[in-house]
Amino acid sequence: MEPAEARARARDLAALWSVEQVDAADLVAAACDLLVTDHDGTALAMLAGVSARHADQEVPDLLEAALADVGLPYYEPGSAEGVQAALTVLAARVVAGEMEPSALTVWAHRVLGHDWSGPGARLVVLDDVYDAEEYDGPPPVEIDAEVLAEARRLVDGSRFVWRLTKYDPADRDEQGRYLGTADIDSDRGPVEAAYLASVAAFAAETGVESLAIREPSAPMDADIHHDGVEVSVDRALELVRSMLRGERGFCRLEAGDDFFVHVGWDQYVYVGSRIDCPRSVVFAEDHGLFAEPIPDSPYAFGELDDEDTPSGPPTRCSGPNCSV
Image (cartoon, rainbow, N blue to C red; front, top):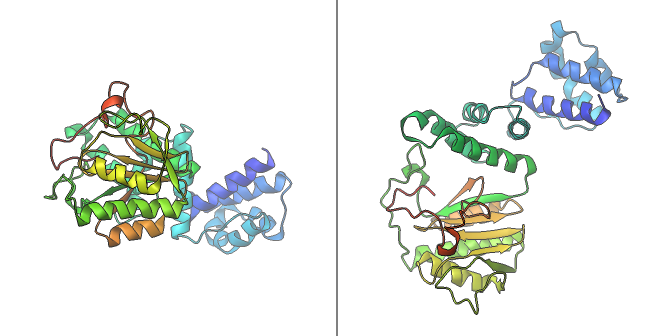
């Protein structure tokens, strides 16, 4: 075992131990691996010397100092930081093919629960979808793919995506279909203004000053809104307004890998950023909208079939039961 591998293994096991996913004896073995790969430290040596028989009693008192000897983080048992770290470890196992996607959602449902609002919250919902699949849900392969996408996002941490809507999540069924009474059309008033202000807030928090128009569809003015043209955030907001109203076609609005805005049917807006945007989430909620974390936009590049691209989003909901 290489030194870096021993460190990574100890780091992962420490996170999993904090959520009772591994035994204390596993940490003793990890300490031994660290010692034989040229790591040292008094507390680390003491941890490596603990007998498996007494691990449950002695490891809790030694672990923090032992991890400090090798510069690794310590997570208090049951802490939110430990839960998040363990979630990332398990997500990496899914990405590597070492863990079934459904096993990750079961763990998330049990440990995170429906009250969890941090990264990985979508996994809890997907566990419900797995449970309902045999009745009326999508084929398991589609659910697996969505879990894998969420796992990849958790592992690389490179993109945060929110579904921005006026639809209260409390009014959705287990499959995510909206069952409330909110109108699927723009009010052309305060709610529409809240959408635009919220998109502006996300762009500002990300530090974006302009966006590129990507794959515009008819009837957008091709002479002005051609693929790749850069527009200001203010101009982009006018295009978002037009799309919310169903006017003049569709397009993606993107700033490289840093930021995007995609407008779907029925007042569904997807915002993505290279950074977490907690202030913007609060801003949207303060303005009556719901900013729900999701794995990725359904209108991201590669998600649409070729025949769908020219005319805009691939699937239009026929009513307020739209779930995307």
